[in-house]
Amino acid sequence: MIQPLVNNSLSRLRDADVIYNRVQQLSGRFFDNGEIGDMKGFLREAALLLEGVKGTDAVIGIFNHNTYCPDLEVGHKEFWGDLPPVPQTERMRQLLGLLEKEYAGFPAESVQWFAGAIDKIPFEHRQHLRIYHCGIAYRRLDGRPIRLFSKGVPIQYNAQRQFSFTYNYAQNVAHLIKKDFTYYWVRMEYGANRELVQSWHSEQKQQLHTDLLSPREKEILLLIADGFETKEIAAQLHISANTVGNHRSNMIERLGARDTTALVQLAKMASMM
Image (cartoon, rainbow, N blue to C red; front, side, top):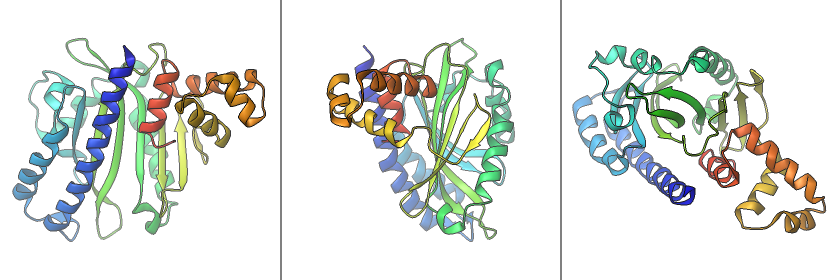
């Protein structure tokens, strides 16, 4: 029964991309010198746009990097469950309090990695940046598990060329991740055509100046997604069937995918294919 869920997940992600483009256009009308001038007007119009992907398995919004809290969230009540009301300035602390204990180091690890990486990226490349997080485990107060997949895209920079606001889309991919996967991974793409990639995998706990999947692995995964069987892929690439199987197993293990179908879906969501 995973296929309907996969198709629904991909549909939501495509919807989110459409909404992102509209929110980006909207931001051009309301931002002034790196700040939202007419905040109420922006939130009102953005909320109407973001309703398009509201659902129980997704939350989307605008994150304010000056205050380190979301200025706008849609779908958050359904996604995160019935949480007690807190001031907006305490929102991130509240959500991080739902992290499973194995992921307690995630906030510091990921921020440290990202801050170090972004400082070395020329501003003209940063303007095309997208960042993906996957696998972080949360537990709602009602016991429902969340395995987070998120996509963040800057939509405004301040005078110091630092992010002011990002558009964020998050989805629960618990149906795609193995239950015993205790790691998470981050992928950052940038450049004029987003051709440059850096990544982080919590198992190695080190910055990678390459993608999470190798060019050969991506080649094999594209053929898998096109419906080719292992022997057919081996013949096309002039390698053994065992080699194809090993690459498939390694990709599943690295991304924490539940099976091959989930592997293809996660790779698509993170723009690796």
